[in-house]
Image (cartoon, rainbow, N blue to C red; front, side, top):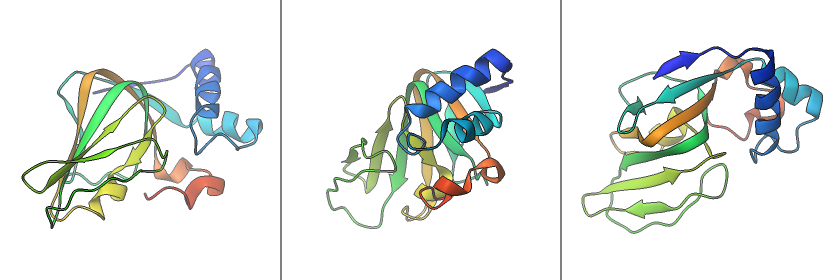
Length: 150
């Protein structure tokens, strides 16, 4: 995907957007505004890999529009129902020891979150044209750091 810089108007909108993201919802508005200064957007085409276990990435990804499916290789073939940071995702089981989570707008995920659960690998693939808001680890506010695996 292409990294898109944010101007002042975009940062203001990004602050409002963060207010609707569960892990940022209770953050004081001033802190949300400061946090928004460190975000960047990425437009990603349908079917493109956003991140995989082959990369070292400590970013927090927030879906702005579109959706992202994350695929995880698992040790066992048990069916599983779970939620991630936002509490809104359904983990689906496939027949080959691979699980899938579909992420929707305002859902969050990180590479580390899945690397710790996956036996050997994972891949995040965009479903449809997708815009992702990205925050690098060093800019993550301490108030929510404990809620995010980065």
